[in-house]
Image 1 (cartoon, rainbow, N blue to C red):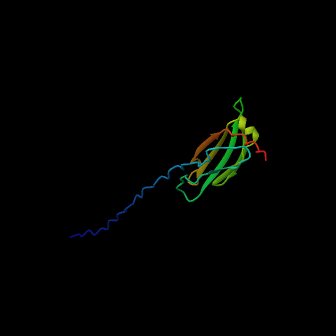
Image 2 (cartoon, rainbow, N blue to C red):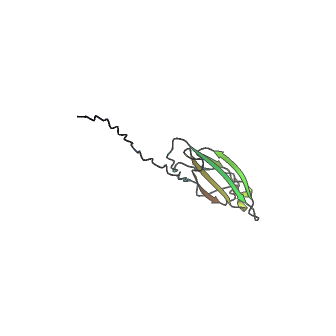
Image 3 (tube, rainbow, N blue to C red):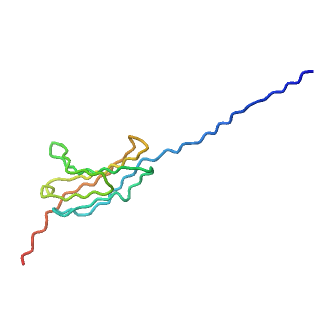
Length: 126
């Protein structure tokens, strides 16, 4: 009589689902008025980025009648301050915020605010 003794090995694989990170959601908190010579501060405090490291890039631009874009200022930070000039009363300035997460080279979103500066108030005679 033969006895068959066998050993059966089972491999159990556990599949752990990966959770996709959501794209950042940029939000710009901006002043409601823009006056020549008065610094205007823009803030990204309402933005959402679900990775440990996110970058915040600000750019202030304007376009001429030929749709050529001119960069007025850039900054990498969570806030951005731009002081409108006399030239900004005759053009529309756009402030753009780009929030990039570190989980993908192409995982970014942008938000923008456009404004036309008001002239500085005339000095009051004493």
